[in-house]
Image 1 (cartoon, rainbow, N blue to C red):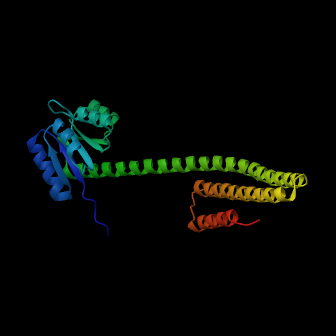
Image 2: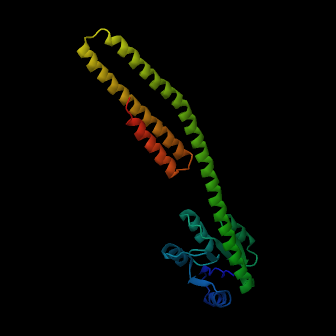
Image 3: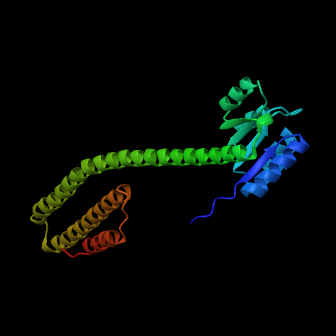
Length: 249
């Protein structure tokens, strides 16, 4: 059976007696690692400096200077996505609503704090955040797959449009070389005919090499955009290019 995750909590509160009881309970009874900040500014400093980060931030909304809401606003501006849980007082429903608008996952009335209830809220906050992160990643993956498919379809359309034109162009070049060669040979003396014949042979070989190279590039592009770079298929394309480029007429 998998062991429960040891959550790392940042508890931001300026009441030493409250912090002592809560931190001890979360550590001893629920195995959480609790780092304490005694002010909002200290909480911000820890969020900036701690390399390991935190799984959940528990904020007291009422602190001198930088309040819990101020910390939430700073987290939003700074792009810090650590899930937060707000500690409020009785009759402070407006604060609770405001904290939720600022991105807090939940809130807990401070004067009614029960360690078990708070621990459950912390775990639920962490789980909801993990689910959110997973959902965002899945949405991004789906979006990437969709964009890749669209790109693949567009590239295939272009390749399918280019290929017949290239085939026709190469065929026309081959025919023109044959026709021009036969017409020119008749008007030349035997010595020049031999030189011209060699020139045409060289030109035809170069045309074959160009054709083989273009076909190989088109095939590789299809492999790339179809997202299945099979090594054997790439080797086959390379071998086919070499054979066609080096073939004798």
